[in-house]
Image (cartoon, rainbow, N blue to C red; front, side, top):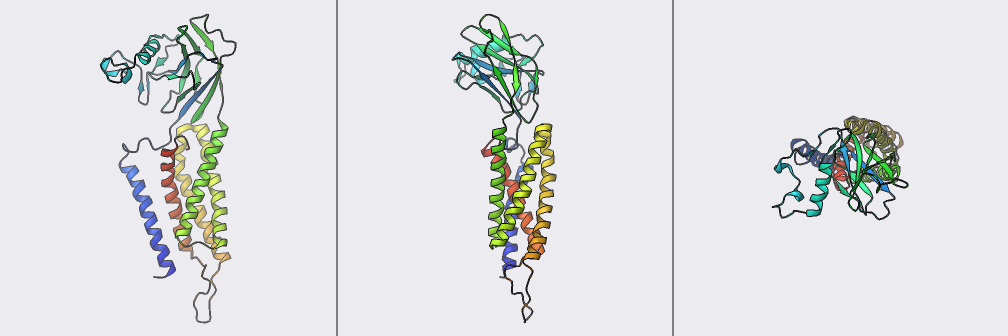
Amino acid sequence: MSKIARIRLVAVLICSVALLFLFDLILTPTAHADIGPKPSVIVTVQDLDGRACYGTLLSEYSSTGPAIAWDGDHDHMPWFAVPDSPNYDRTETEIWQVFIDFADADGYYYLQCHWNITETNEIAWTYYPPRNFKILLYFPDTQSFAVSEIHQAYAFHSYFNVNLNGVDIDGVQAASITAQKSYDCTWEIVSLFIRIVATVAIELGVAFLLRIRSKKQILTVLIVNILTQTALNITINVLAFFQGGWAMLWYLPLEIAVFVTEAVAYSIVFYRMQRPTVGIDGGLTNKDFIPIRICVLYSLCANLISFAAGFILALVIPGII
């Protein structure tokens, strides 16, 4: 079997595996519903000074995703609040009841999701958070509340800081607190770096399997991938910041654009830098020569498998995309 024939065979096998995975995602959406990226709202509460505290987000609407306001139906109570349940938790039920009984001045809803933030100092709503919300804190030691003004999620991953320094919580029934936007640039930069490194590593691995292994070839693949993947991921991050979840509608078209760009770049660079040398007998003497069709095939394989791997990475490390 010739070198090109072996490359084609490996490429077909790689494409087949990647396509099977992607078809599985498409044909069985219920099994993979949580694989895709999900919006989040993260609220950090500062200066609790060791006080016990629970927090939640009050929603403008009575439901968001699976979270829903309690309608008084016993069947719609959370698992920890059902008296006959083996998972019944008296403390959690008492906190749940306190939030249920809270009457917001603007009619915002408690969606039966709350967090004990005594040690974590963080409300982390990572699965379909409300878009318009208030931050509500409850201090069980004094049975007092603190509530914020209305806020809106401003990005796919929205971050807020609440500083309790100087807020008189114990002296009033519901103290007023303010929250400031605090976008976590550090995590976004880290996740951006991880995605780029992972994709480049995958595409270099595919190149090795397809016998694209000379120093000049690997250097070309490395440079092209760093440029295209950096551009792709920065674009996705910018779109995600301004468009939230709708930014993912751009993901497939942008991946196609990357595939075309890389295929053209490899075809031009490989052909010009490694132009075949014809021997006396008419045969090719340059063993590193890669035909244009193989360049296109490699780009297709590499991008298919990295696209599929992106879903796996999002599942293993939630929030990475």
